[in-house]
Length: 256
Image (cartoon, rainbow, N blue to C red; front, side, top):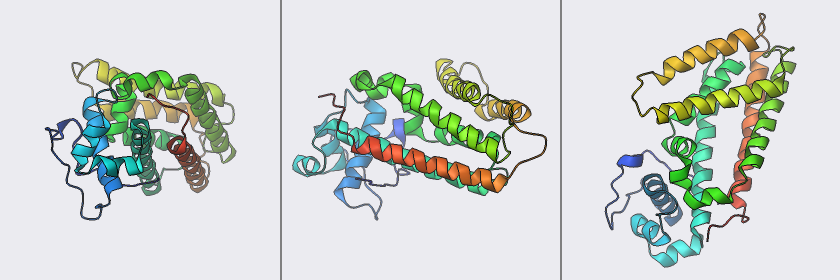
């Protein structure tokens, strides 16, 4: 459906989710679809897919169950709509950060912005670091191998394009670099959660070290065309948006 909503009113795990409570939407978001998505987002983040029901979502949104069923027949459909909305928020945030960054056309800056924007999106961050809680039995339906293979293919293509405009060294193996970058990103997110705050390392300081390593290894001594690098990144984001639209409209997966 392509619904967009303002998630600032939600506070993730701190959201008040008492029985019968209703998230009050922003004045510009009075349509039932947006209120339903806001409620579903908070419930999924707090309880996860398995423990969230359509009735819970209707109650939290303050709408009749018949109103909810008019827009979404299954919990799976609402989940995909929330995921799509959050992904669009994330992509817009990354695009803004890159456009505002004078060095946004370098792979180093792109990697930093992709990482930090995901960290700052509490729903996607929770999905990335605690997928068993958020997804529950829905996780078993996903073809993770195909998803990650597609992601790696996109990364390799992106790096190849960055090579063509001179912002990535010509002599690096883009497939290997893409694998290493994805592994570093995933590892940093997961380690932070696994340590449970017991190892007081700043994520920003960690990213400073990683980006310096990337810059020294990947970037040529003579800077390439940074404007072209930004344009490539915007095109890359468009491709990701197309995947988001595809996931939202897909009816192939059902946990029912």
